[in-house]
Amino acid sequence: MYPQDLKYTKDHEWVRISGTEARVGITDYAQKQLGDVVYLELPEVGRQLSKGDVFGTIESVKAVSELYAPVSGEVTEVNRALGEKPEAVNSKPHESWMIVMRVSGNGEHDELLDATQYAELTKS
Amino acid sequence: MPVEYSGIVDEHHAVRSRAGLFDVSHMGEIEIAGRDALKAVQHITTNDAARLSVGQVQYSALPTPNGTFVDDVLTYRLADEHFMLVVNASNIMKDFAWINSSIAGLGDAVAVNTSSRYALLALQGPAARDVLQTLTGINLSEIKYYWFTTGEVAGVRVTVSRTGYTGEDGYEVFVPPASAERVWDAILTAGKAAGVIPAGLGARDTLRLEAAMRLYGNDMDETTTVLEADLGWIVGWKKDEFIGADVLRRQKQEGVRRKIAGFEVLDRAIARHGYDVYVAGEKAGVVTSGTQTPHLKKAIGMAYLPIEAATPGTEFEIDVRGRRVKARVVPMPFYKRGQ
Image (tube, rainbow over all chains, first blue to last red; front, side, top):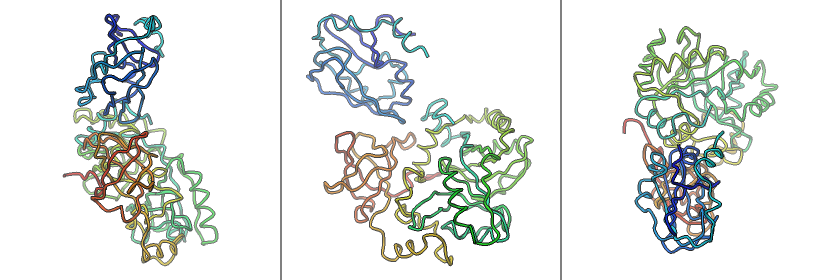
């Protein structure tokens, strides 16, 4: 159920790595925990993030949750369109990217989980 | 009662457009009976229970001597000298102890905590009547708003009350706990074609907030008076005497210094329970309830504001996790059915 071509974090973000570019969203598991997403607060382009930094906030009707940078780097793109239609995070979580980062850290994404490991982590 | 079944937004829309079924069995029931039961109820509640006919319900408060809330309650007149108070789940033991100590010495009246005798199912929404009618010989259209009757639903002896906590038309059904599952299943089966779905605590909260119904523990408690909660209409001003009457009468005469107000967030943000409120740059209170409403698609809420700022149109600020966002006082309720 979790796409094989994505990497995952223990904070329930997914990352699509291509070269030095990392595209980031939250997983199906995360959106199910949150419930109906109604609001997204995303950073500005150019923001420098270290792995684990809060890069934004996601709110559902019932809760507020922070978004964590899965790797270190600079924010190069922000999905403002998603901010206008945040409910897409519920319907298509693995297509609803939030930011793109230019990865600066070395080998950090070796620590990311693959689909099998992530599925194991979220097994209840 | 779970927070959600199919999702808060889905359940919220179902109640506004069709109907939703809530299991609110956690609510408490305290009955007061005896030759002086009316006198006792008049003493411990703010509203005028003498105005209730048998079969009628009223919203009321259990006041402290300071005119603040021990709890908010629904008062049912079961018989001339037999009343039932429906109280908040978290307050059952507190209320029961308070009532017992408050009615001691008032004559022939005894309070019994009957919470374990009732499960409570709430069917709420425009389709509620037609769905429930298929399961009962009671003519539901004859039950007026805030009245109740007894009869059978799905073959189970129940009390049906035309009340609710959603801003929609609907019914609350008091059921013996052993038969609750049977009635629950029967309502969902009967309502399937009409799109009735189970609804949870999350939708209950967004629905009641749109309807501007206060929630004990959020919007009022032992630190806020009945008048500050803008609930002067549940005070029987013509009654002789009740707990807290002096304070409330004085406050009515002198005016309150702060009052609960409804607001809309103007910036893109959601103001939630506990967030600080600033008026003209000064911290002036807290948000007591706040959410993004599924039906109105706006961030709304309630907060206590200084009286001069509590009028519709006034703008103020709310601290949303370190960011000051703009909000505006609006009239309540936020949602009224049929509009």
